[in-house]
Image (cartoon, rainbow, N blue to C red; front, top):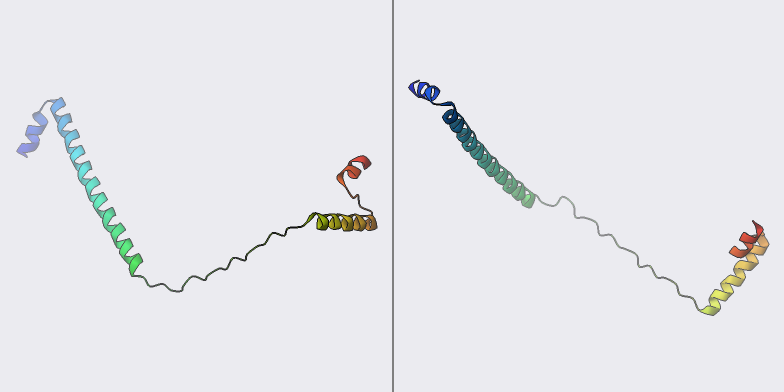
Length: 103
């Protein structure tokens, strides 16, 4: 009780300084405890993760190889010819210029 009476009799500026110093010290202590507990939780998580056996291996996914076809000039001309014949059968315009002319 004598300590509190002495503290109450101190000037206001001194009491404020003691309050802020006490608050700062307690804040640093709590921060240290929090960092320590966080470190312990991370280590425990890491150990648990390493100790768990694999329940099932992951399946291997085979990615198919896609080959892009290459055509010679003759093959391209032949395909254009077939396209134009099919377009005439279906009564479709065979080129974009014909489509624009019809509009």
